[in-house]
Length: 150
Image 1 (cartoon, rainbow, N blue to C red):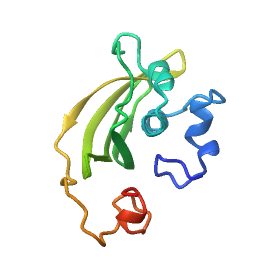
Image 2 (cartoon, rainbow, N blue to C red; image 1 turned 180 degrees about the horizontal axis):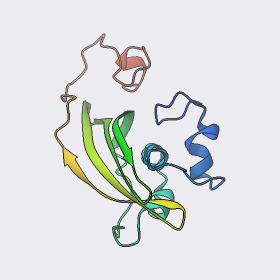
Image 3 (cartoon, one colour; image 1 turned 180 degrees about the vertical axis):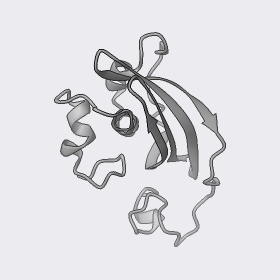
């Protein structure tokens, strides 16, 4: 299966290696992609493990009503100990496609990247309800009703 992070790489050779504990992300963008994938797969334990202890919320259970359907990295900037990753993640909620746009912040401590927090930004992708023969916004090329709308 291709990795949900939209890298085009097989899951086990991409975010799966991080989520399964076989490797640590070398770059903040890799951590961000793996966290998105953890949301897609409902891996709350991985989200907790990668959230900096000073910022980690008490409740980390992903909302099962949300279906994450696509990720686009808009900008990534990394220094020795800090990084930011701006992204837009598309999601399906209550039959409508919407997007979450965030500029996420990361810190590197003892060789490991940690998510701290982020600023929500206005999404460029406008919410819409797919028509009968609309293409799926996840990028599969299939009709929405035969893909994420099934």
